[in-house]
Length: 349
View 1 (spheres, rainbow, N blue to C red):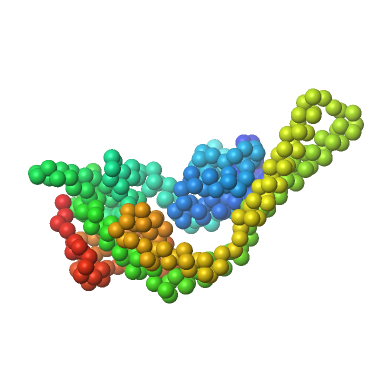
View 2: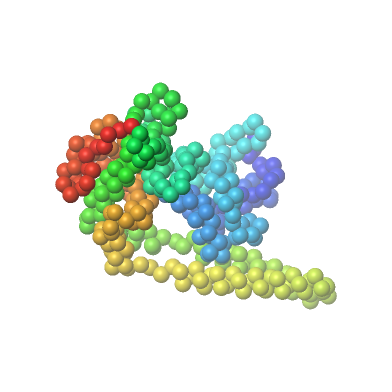
């Protein structure tokens, strides 16, 4: 009832105050926890976050490289929103809070969506809007399907999960190639104008000034390693020297060298991008080929958050503040131009 530690591992981001027997925030690793939650909520995969952390030389509490299971359990840990739990006892605010509750909830929603998400593709077909396309009637995820017509031709489309499982929704399926091309063209027109690019670059320039979370964590590991080396040398000075002592000292020295290299690498990998460099990066989207599948995938993954399909309109949300767009199906042809083949809504299945 006092929120004291009852055993078990201490999660990343916390330290154990042995005198009070309570968890306290670790100022060195807590920013890493926030980084994991923010990256996942922004659309990064757990695998990419793990690879990034390991490439930066960061380690778990046990000094091991991170793995997918490390972050999968971390992202579900309710301690980070201040919830203390012991058997049937739950105390709100019993643990120092590291993650805001709204961020935690967004992460849980995305994990649940991904848990139920279908495979991105069967055979050769790639459904670019998987996990991003939703039914406007029942708000369930729309999933990729295929079927053969009476002529033997193969058709690909997205179908509402509720309608597919007969959950009371009667939303008809939409043709895959049509909805993907519409989303790509609308995204290019809506996101990639000069004013929005300028605002995005302004925001990124501000973010670059924020504190680096990698180097402090590495320096903390370096201090711990140097302390261990110092203690071992004191023991040797007192006459405690065995083959295992020698091996342990060599391991610590090697670990220290590795951490020093990782610190230097992290510092070299943090050059600040100029406005000109960022503008050049955005230009690849402004002038990309909307018919190229790799370009379509990069554009959707980078900028499109969700698409809701209604009988008479589409509602798109982009990955920037106030980035919601509603467009009637009858407006799509004029919005995309007369040169867009198949811009009018196709016959639905």
